[in-house]
Image 1 (tube, one colour):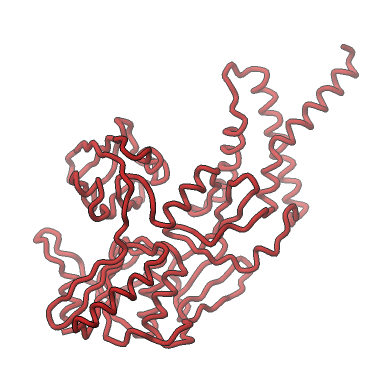
Image 2 (tube, rainbow, N blue to C red):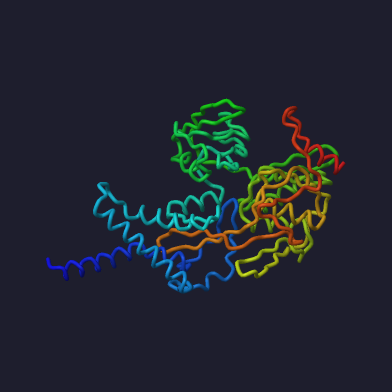
Length: 412
């Protein structure tokens, strides 16, 4: 083969390699094939605005971005040439592409934006609807990316074996997951119904092992109790689909039992669907009252308002803590701003941004932070949190719920 043929073959191969990474340009240009169905999970929203007007294949990148994509494509092509020539292992083309796109999105440096493979997206939808197989825990991460159990779900496998709030997950199936983050730990714990997983936790300096059977988890969104002095207590565990309607039903039952005042417990509620939070606020505030202010990447503001006549007129106290996040902060912030409720507990988590989901034709998705939200008085939430009207720490040593006691005192 002469030099000219070699050069021609090289250019053809280079062009082919570029095609393998064409999805990167699709993502950077935000090419949207189909807008996701209106479902998202614990920290996310189903508000897509006019995104369905974006046509498939539309390129909105500026020249600078196009040049940046060219550099990336050329770099990846160079890498692939070396890999094809030197690598002794098998190459899974789909995995290479998925990991390449994940790396690009991770490079944005936003903890809530991510690329979801087809499998990731299916699980994402399942969890958003509150129907999933697992051990049944709500998780969060500390500043070192260690996974902390916020709370075991009622009657879940985790609760039954003795997992408790505050436990730090340090191992899964004898693999250390210290500092691995919630996504990695969740992927290690999940599996088929009926199978077992070994979870190692650290509790007060002691390491404990639990063999836990994975089961279909039933999420109890709302729990109620009638307290002394005709105080109705309503605990909301998460803002999954349908929880606002469930809350309304439970409230009406408490009212029929004689409730004159209401405590809403949002402690350890890490959020969920923003639309559910707005539907919940509809119950507490007069029609056409501002409940949320959102700001997009161009600085445009949008004001969410209540749509229905006010149902709940009783005095209200809302309980929050450091694990009350996202949708919980929307509810607490709005009720506090409008002086509709007193907020008791400790400062909330501080998750005040909204993600939208962009779908590709193969069923994978890009979850991207597109808006920041504020309380009705435009008080910042993200990275700040909601300050309670009454800051009260739990008396853990004596196992006294001082926060609930304060709420009852305010309503007495």
